[in-house]
Image 1 (tube, rainbow over the protein chains, first blue to last red):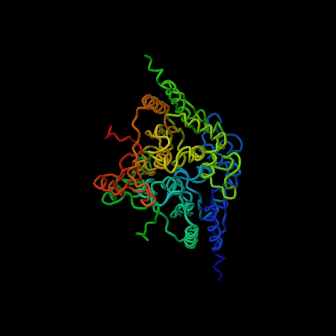
Image 2: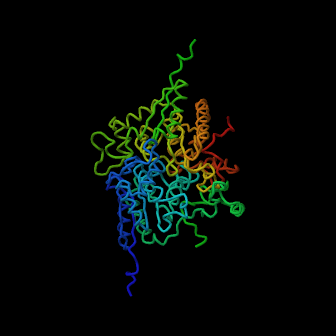
Image 3: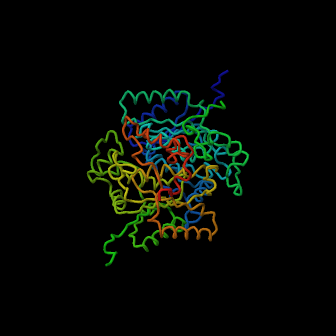
Length: 283
Length: 283
């Protein structure tokens, strides 16, 4: 019996944002394409600069008439346009890729503690309400809970600068808006970020070692345990309840030494490396 | 004696990102223009969507030859182009506005726990090395330490969702990358953010009251105490020292109940509302 026949081919999408094919980011992307292809994946790459990907959220993202041209509200217009299949082709194409993908890797250089604008544009325009989330479907109830996603990025800073006693502060805090606010919000299982610390100022052997470690990690990526976030069942998801922790959950955590996550900290010390390492305890 | 003669006119810059003139963001911008003009300010507005502001960081941002066309490194190319006055005109014009400004207000709807891509593009392309920071001049040694800056934004979420026990987590964590990583990094004195919680779902009298409170605040904005961050003198700013807290400072904070800032937390509970409220104790 041939197992292959029962196993649908898996798909990975790499959303990639660097201007130069000679960059370390390009090398990291190529390593991922090669490793995942070698594992039998179909690998799609959205090379945002090469595609001249439009970053700004405008009325041009919608074909045909607007719902309210007098007062253009992007998220409302996009929801209706998505329902009616009237999104611009570049957005629809990216959504098709996301739909197919079992894994999405965002590969980029960190710009200002975040993604470059062109990649923020991909997030703003592709991950729209209806397609990527709804008021009923967010976080661990999210649309993409069968999919995995991760950030893979280079920094200009050293690792020590992004410590809780470093000049830039704890990297876990810097990662929260992207990993919780974007990826986990859409339901993705968020894999540990792949951070290439300061490759531009590293000698060639160090750069090579970074890429080797990345290849090594890629070989076991899909069996990694994802980061842990607060389950939505912890919260009273009603306007009366304010979308805040249920009293019994709060009580349960009252005796714990740490908060639940980096931002759901409950006035306690942050759980160490909550956005950097998968929790091993319930494995 | 006429005091006016000795007082140079102050300038405010509003970097504004909403697609619709009928939006609450537009009303918030207009309130700021009116209030600041009334106080004698020269008010400049960069209406990013109306300007069709380019968001993506590309080689087109540079006039003339590149330093290394084979391997385009944006921040290095931009530094050289800035030194040689070869930046594209749209960037130079924005930099001229920032130079003049005593106060910069970023007015936007929160997209994915951050600024819309078009505004991230303004940050990525305008606040470049050389003009906005250098390795010697960052944070409280930054270029813009005589200037003030602030975020003013609308949310789709309620205030309770962004509490330390809310579904989105502590707003202070979400604000850190923008307020510390962008504004304070460039040296700006960062004023308390102006957050308009969920105006789209608020009845007209509530929206009116929000704008009235904003006008009221604007009347005293320039005498407000800014948010507090960790002074750079707390850190050993050398590669050997790792840009980490000096041992004597760490020792000094060992007995404190809270960390220094939201991300320089030292494994302690976060100082409450560090990114939301100015510290009153040394006033």
